[in-house]
Image (cartoon, rainbow, N blue to C red; front, side, top):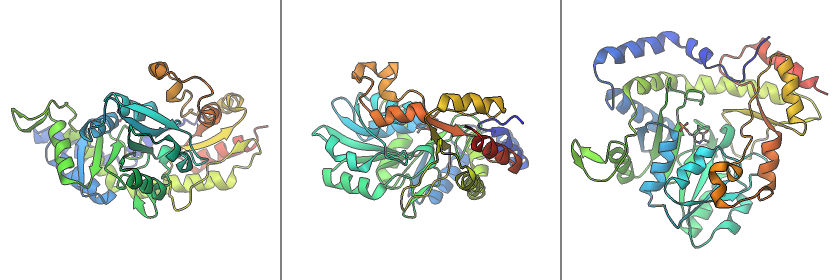
Length: 364
Ligand SMILES: *Cc1c(COP(=O)(O)O)cnc(C)c1O
């Protein structure tokens, strides 16, 4: 059997007719950027998350950097973020000239809320929470800290579409919830796409103006903005996905449940959920001290895996200028050396799941 870590084709074929019908509808409409599909998606996605507003953007990185730009966070400011995130989270901070202040993760791979306070300084302006792998972070503690120190709260929900803390959806706890709809995400487009959800009407409007060259009215440019528009085709595809998101998420939860119940191997550490949090299993991430040997072993069975992520941002060449050395974040660095994402995707057959479980159980 040959099992890839992710199969986006399966997600397409599950709803092929609906995607093809919507694509044709958009192609034949003669209107391709910022139109009725985008508006409808924005409304539907806001409703889905429980936020007041949604603004469609070109991708998830734009959602992040434009969020910090519009919150006036830049040079001289510090933003607290977990060390073990995807580098895009950090770039969202540094593209505006602000400095990321890294905090170690807890055992659920989210930011360790007990370690945040000691990193807050006079320059701290915001906390960026990343709901990594689809697990909601401990938002009660984070919201409390943001109130206490008057910090902005931005959520990176690129992996957490639909994940909740205490029944409230990720992305709606703070000032801005940033989403990516990159094809492999839980709600994936067929190209690049992103969005923010916000409750503040003025801020929502700022995003709408900024994404289109800073113009509210055509050729009347109020600010130096960006081109970060969501196109009609992607918005149409995302509406189809959104219609099926609950069944897609339930399917992933069922696969994760099997993994968690049936993978039994002393060499493997399974993912754990925080109290009051749900997980939408963007990735199913295990840990193994002999990770590289496990990768080869699984490869021999035709089972593909991915490391999310092998180099933590503070050790990336891009962030050499921050001056962090190996050993600066021991937990983050240990995770980078031991985490492994095993196959997890919509449309994964029972036989494929059995095969993965059996192979991992027999790893010795
Ligand atoms: C995918 C991802 C992003 C960036 O999204 P793009 O649409 O690729 O720009 C940001 N943060 C996290 C955690 C991601 O997984």
